Length: 599
Image (cartoon, rainbow, N blue to C red; front, side, top):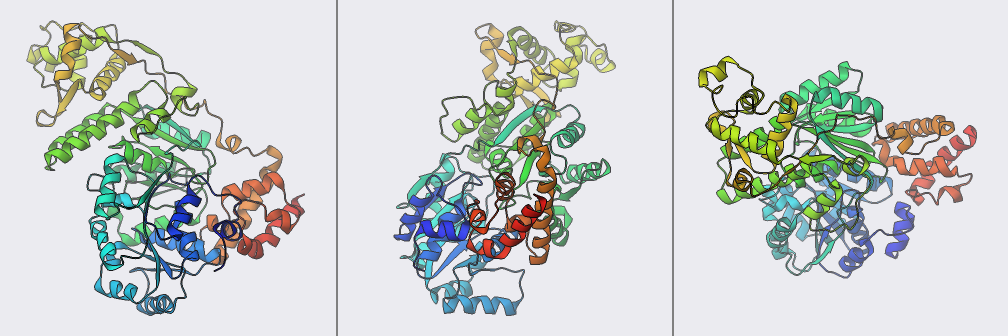
């Protein structure tokens, strides 16, 4: 194919310019170099291997962890007129044989394979008989045993270096802190690879974290006020909570589906297919759902429980707004979340060093929740990226957090833990502090200790906030052997002795009405709402006819550009981002006719 990368970008994808380091990566791999590529979700990683695969001799082999992801990417590439196929267990043997023959004949530009299939002797022999343009290892953070998505099959991929020493290899991911990056290099034999690390910033995502009061109701208010009719993902920690939340949302008039490992493969595949192919569905899921979800118009990701690390949080929230349009990362969490995650970690039998690493990751996640300054700065700092100024697009920037001198109340809270024997839970400790003479307190004799009724200046909810922050700051811990009873940690000594001061958050009343509704944030004028709906309906009709997800036809950002510019000719339509030659030929006339009819 005698094209330049720039020509392919325009003719195939319909974009005028490369973003960030894309062109540098592409040119390096075209020249035969290995590469480690870190780009945020929606940053254009796929183009970094797709274009070199088409410009080098042979087939580009993409190692991808999920069938759904492979199918999605194959559909997208075929829509662009690219010869792409996938080998996986979901296709019959006749089609598998046909695809293998296409690879042997040199008729494929891209071949997607799972790591499990790649490691079979038959597959290695097939690839030895083919001309290989490159190997692209997608979601390469799965190789890290310290990471949040570890896949043992990825550990075997180092064999590519031995079996195909002259074929360039690329490892690509959206999420990897420094230890994970080092492990990717080591495990995949990429010591000589050029590193391309882009900014982790996702400026279109608005981060909001608030205290959990009535989690489901808070979620419903958020969806109804800001994302009615939008696609979103809601993450819950347990399968039971997923089922309950999905059912409750449906009862409240929200189109929602559950997804977790307990549903069975067919039901999971069906629900995922509906989420990808229909508009405005909300998927309520455990973390089993999400890796490789390419749906670009997910307008929000919500967490009803606390993730166990900033990597997990960043990866999960990154599934919102892949199209670059405004999106929300919304989360509620509470004291029970903190205690449950800490206890679960304590009770695991994992190696001590891994447990220590997991603990530090959880501490960082708690720190992100409790900070009073810009959340985006904190996320970027975690990934060793400095941001000089506040983002103006997170809750702490939009509604600055009030703090108070919590030194004295913290001392009372700590002293109460000590005086009562370091074995009681938060509810009991609060009853002591506010002077509530329960039977349990009288039986234990805690109405006689010095901290009884010593904390009447705060109410129950405020004391829970104090204890939550003490847990998050690592001054106390919950003891799983004592049913979650709190105990003091060495870090609290300076505070108890009067050698340290402590500022605490003043929890604001929960309000989700401050941000503008999402339609306003997408900048759709009232006069254009009818046309916007018609454009989406046409896209859906074409997608159903082609048996592909709607966003494979055109993304929301392409439709929005059509809405704003209202092209009057195919030439004008060709300048819309995301409208390449093939899509212009296939769909240009239909969309032009609709726009002209509406005018």
